[in-house]
Length: 86
Image (cartoon, rainbow, N blue to C red):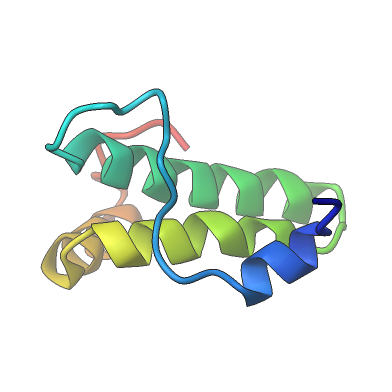
């Protein structure tokens, strides 16, 4: 039971249950993990720390989110028109 974060990421298969999103519709879960990934990256990069722990969020949103949404959000971030707060 004492798996390290690296082992959990390595053995990752699909998004685990998240009690914050108990419903079948996982749209909010997808969006929240996308935001968490970018927030984590930004915070750790600002502190010059390793961003490897952020990989968990990336794997979760990539398994939950349609790639068309991710591409759209990436374009919005580049254009400065992304609606979320990162």
